[in-house]
Length: 308
Image (tube, rainbow, N blue to C red; front, side, top):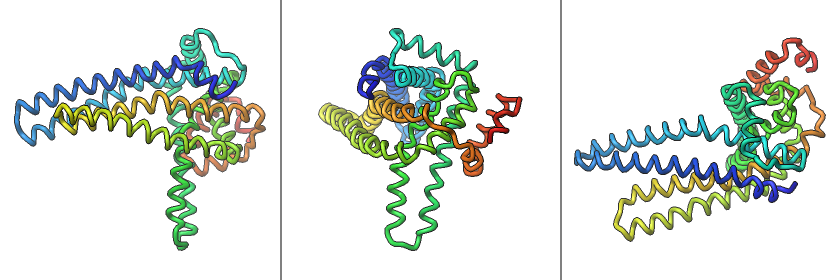
């Protein structure tokens, strides 16, 4: 199935993400109104600063709570369905329930999913920093620092969806341990890095352009409305910021997730894993090393260790 077909046929997940983001935004707006009202009653700059700080802390707490218990599991279910669509060419009719069941069957407890997701994400970020060594080697050459910084931005966008790709591989390899599949998924990504990063070049440009549009439109619309009504410029900025983040997370990130997972899952089944990379990646990333240890715990017989 094509990227376009999978994206539009799994729009239910996009709408769910948008609904979650809208709910978080509404709660944060209500909290802002309460904090602003208290600050107005106290009529003090110190009180305004304190209430703004309290609002920011409450906003972060609400976001973390909702995303931890709801958002991440919806993302995992979406990843599971995308994997099914790419590898089988079929999308279940009741995709949301099917995706949730796939997550529950693959991960005995939600904590196992969160642990693997964070280890993969941490490992990829650590491996990404290796690129910074280029600047140290060629630091004396004028213009190299700027080039390396641009390269790191590009790679950061391209690798921003690696953890989802690797999680998708865990749903594809149902008979293997989840942490072993996570390790294999990262290795497969780096074995195919040239192909995947080349394909990600266009994806990264789309992200940059689409993100700019997603940010500029709410700021212009909301800022204009608030200015006409004579309302607070700070409130307009904060509301526009939240709306922009919600739109990007729901629509743009979901499209990029499908795009990168299709590229990844097209090459992953045919990739013969080079186990030498396990040792190299363990040396480069403490998170990958931790994930590898958990993979060995899943496989007490030692077969995994013997294969490297």
